[in-house]
Length: 112
Length: 111
Figure 1 (cartoon, one colour):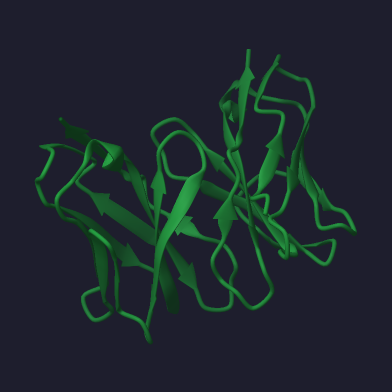
Figure 2: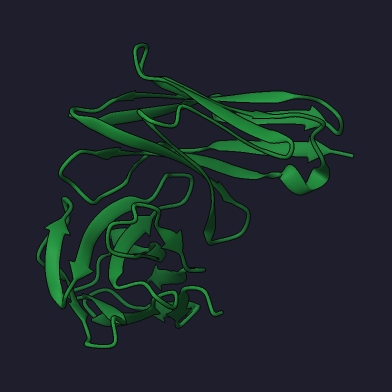
């Protein structure tokens, strides 16, 4: 049973560029959440997707957007990248009515 | 504003020692508290504590929740080098889906 998978594992971009990160949830899970983890900090909630809709959003600008597909996989898009967007981006999945979120290995984004 | 504070920020112990990690929170309408272990990248789930489950144990790890004093502790007995990791505490509010994380405690266990 595959756990949460994310791609790519690493990414280097320059300021102003756009990036798309991908996540496949754990088998049987239908909800996907995205978090940003800066070095030495705890993860910060970006948003959560359920039934292909953004269900809740954290304090992130509109440059951060997402999508969930019918197979429950999800994408995180970040436009107009800033140096401060450099971080580990974690995807977490969960099942309806179950609170525990299971995390993927993350995508480490470096913005130069 | 919701706040989750973990202490200490870092800790170095020797194999066989017992450690206690702390997590205090100020969150409106608390629903649950979760502990994760993060070794390289992916945080792995350890425990979830709620009003109906304020004490959990798994092997050498145990955790309790004090809803009155608004804190939780994670105990690790007979530590091993494999316990070296960052331990994250997260709190969930009722009616929301997001986890509010603390900054974590970095534990290093020396052989």
